[in-house]
Every structure is written in C-alpha cells, then in structure tokens.
Length: 138
Image (cartoon, rainbow, N blue to C red; front, side):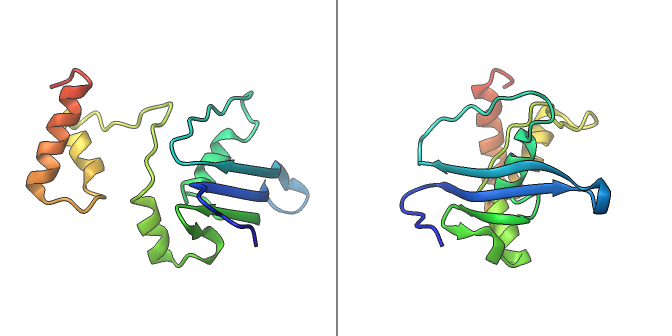
C-alpha cells in the first residue's frame, strides 16, 4: 500500500478499461500521480486520451478496476456505497459542458447543487445568492 502522506490525491498503477471480451479497450495505462493540497493542475490531451475517465475515477463517478486510488484520506476501493456518497459531497466539479437545467433559474440551479451539502435552507439560499453575486449574476 502506498503512503498517502499529505497528498490530497494519490494514484498508483491505475488502469481502466471499457467494454468486454474482444471489445475491451484500455483507456488508462499505469497512471501514477500525486496531488498536494493547493496544487493547481492542468490536465490536457487529445480527445479520447482518458482525461475525463481519470477525473470521474477521482470523483467517485466510476469504480477503480486496477491499481490504487486514494483521495481525501480514503482508499476508494475500500469504500462502501454510503462512504462513496460522503466522498462525493466533498469533491467539486466544474464540467466543460455545463449541465444547467434550462427550466430552472440561475438561483434554482445553484440551490440544487448546494442541496448535497449539510446546509440549512437559509444557508443554502444565502450562499447561492453570494455565489451568483461573485460571478456577476446577482
């Protein structure tokens, strides 16, 4: 087992595949990575190179198939379904194709995302208004 030390994310010999049998295709090959708190990382590469697959593994949106992945002090392979839900509440994503609900106002879209957190209704509303104000949508 790897020593996670102070790393926020630590990955060792991570491989990932899509498909089964003769249609099985490997998309991540022996990934080794350590991210420290506050470190800014840019993940670049051509379409199909595995960027989104890697991020969805770190974000617990996919299960680790081969290798080790530790994030926020947790070994992902050992997480129960309840622990996966808890981990997802501590991880934030900004998707390149924003997934807003067109039928909702900007405020309702932000409120929907905040429902995952442990906020009261008033705290969610105040925080959502503050967030929108900061990005010029107040």
